[in-house]
Amino acid sequence: MSTDRTSATNPGHAPSWYAHSANDKRVRDPLVGELSADVCIIGAGFTGISAALQLAENGYSVIVVEGERVGYGASGRNGGQIVNGYSRDLETIARRYGQDKADALGKMSLEGGAIIRERVAKYGIQCDLVDGGFFAAFTDKQIREMAHVKAHWEKHGHDGLEMVSKSDVGKYAKSDRYAGGMIDKRGGHIHPLNLVLGEAAAVESLGGRIFENSRVIDLKMGANPVVKTDKGQVTAKYVLVCGNAYMTGLLPKITDKMMPVSSQVMATEQLDAKFIQDLLPANYCVEDANYVLDYYRRTADNRLLYGGGIGYGGQDPANLTGVIRPNMLKTFPQLKDVKIDFAWSGNFALTLTRIPHMGKLADNVFFSHGDSGHGVTTTHLLGKILGETVNGHASRFDVWSSLQAYPFPGGKTFRVPLTMLGAWWYGMRDKLGV
View 1 (cartoon, helix red, strand yellow):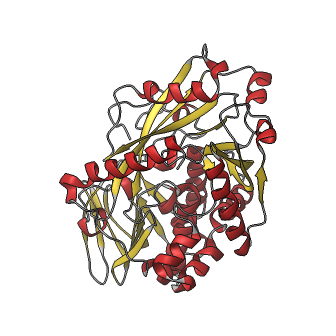
View 2 (view 1 turned 135 degrees about the vertical axis):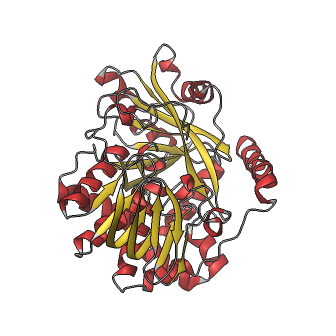
């Protein structure tokens, strides 16, 4: 995500509608001096905060150190969509890793969304939670693929899916672009920055401590590992590394197996309530079925939040709205005179397999990263699993850590152009409908 532009109303965050409308804009102190805790967590995004809350609820003393602000990265800048599952379907996971692994991941695949809803209710988090998601198809081929995915999902207990005919698309999106699609009643959307801020406040209410502007400069392994920042350090029994796409350079064993990828988002001016309700009558979030997809939804204050585009290596386009606005107008030409109030970009961590990468650097140092574009739900699940692992229940961690991760071909020099070539190929297949 872009780091040279910050929010005027919420310093240290990207200039997003989320930062502008955040419920909690207080800046937490940096780490100064020497502290100790049962667990030190690196990174205050969804993964780190989810793990911290799981541990704090179980009585552990927890310290979270964050290089910027809580929710600074993808957790506070994404499209805000609760999308169940992973970036690769369960059949692909079965082919790669075996049916037993696919079955295990299938049992967990709806849990991320359930964790979000449970915590929102338990801690009274105000994050504009709305149920329902719509997957929009451009072609008959994409519709057939959705129907196949639906049948497979249902074998794993997902009972919230329904196919949508072309004649019924208008119930979810008043656009002429789509040939049909599928709804997920267990999907939904939220204000992601307010969600992670609310979860962070819940951690603190249970005695956890969170330090912002405390970038980690060194991690020393040992019986009691030490996490060092420029002004302090934390000695802990366990360390959880949850830096994701913004953890450049610290731990090559992790970062060499992921690539930062940027996505662009914008939010319109506030629209007339009836006008935006006509665009998205069910108030479901929407994502299309293309390889490089668009995603959009209504906000609580009646804006259209629209995202898309992709920048491998984390590179931002010079003109954010120039990338997204043309696609928005293809979808909703009735917005041609609407102003754009906010535009921002942000990085998520992509793995070569498009499957999250979990593992351990030592017997008491664990990590999770690489949610590959499905992070809102998956980070909540994997953060909880990290907490379970520290608490002595590692069976689910063992499943995830057994899934082999690989470095990108071409190394740091050629991984971006090679990945771009692959994306171009799949993009052409979308355009040609093959």
